[in-house]
Amino acid sequence: MGQVLLEALIDSAKMLPFLLAIYLIIELIETNKKAKLNMARLLGSKWSALFGGIVGTIPQCGFSVLSADLYTQRYLNTGTLLAVLIASSDEALPLLLASKQTFVSGAILLATKLVYAVLVGYLVNIFDKRPLSYDFSLDQSAEGCCQHDMHHKPTFWQFVKHPLIHTAKIFAYLLVLSVGFGALMHYASDGLSAFLQQTYWLQPVVCALVGLIPNCAGSVLLATLYADGLISFGALASGLACSSGLAFTILLKNKSTLGKTPIIALLLYVFALLFGYAINLVMLAI
Image (cartoon, rainbow, N blue to C red; front, top):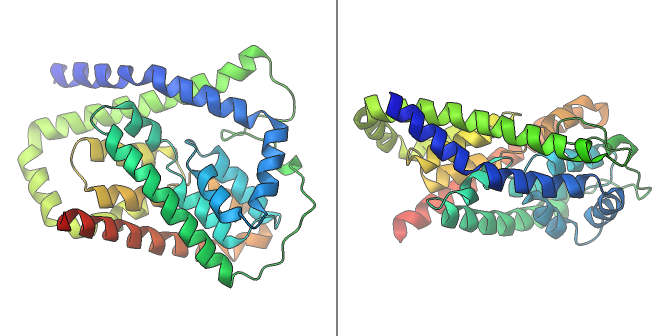
């Protein structure tokens, strides 16, 4: 067990510099009000689904939360919101790209999710006739992913504080999960491998449900399961196509989108399943 703890600590610590660098860059974007205003305008243009998919690929749930808030204010079509949510991988992408073992898979997933998100976005927008508002304002969106204030120019400490908090939280999640799965593989690897092989075609169904959980721990769990070889690439794709962080909590808070939220969640889940099963079929055919 001591060896499991040591290996989990070393593997998790290797990712710290990469995670911190990503979260510092994201904080720089989030604190730039002009950049966020231009982003809002682009999300409401004819290029909305394309730009929504690109925005969604940015790690962390901040931009999916921003998109959900813009949707409640009628600045986004449903397809554009879905493009952001499908392209989003929450906290999983930094973990996949930070490891040599999963870097290629992470890059492939990033590209395929982007293309799929854009296609879904434009398809759904064809049927979405909801009138949009063009009086852009970010007053209600002046919070970061962890609800810290974005109204004022931050001091140096305020700027680095939240990336450090995010990095520490993900490091803690990763360490706990690594220890847990390390112990599981140490004591029950044969039985677990047999069970997962028998449930190969059910994995996308379960992983997509995990992705819908409004917490970054779900995306970290999915990335860890995939890195340990416990779920298929298609199951990972389904789960991360649903991993939108706290976006659904924003939709549920607003009366104007409360009734639409179950429909959006169902659409997201169905499109995520189609994505995951298509990837599994391609992987079997190769």
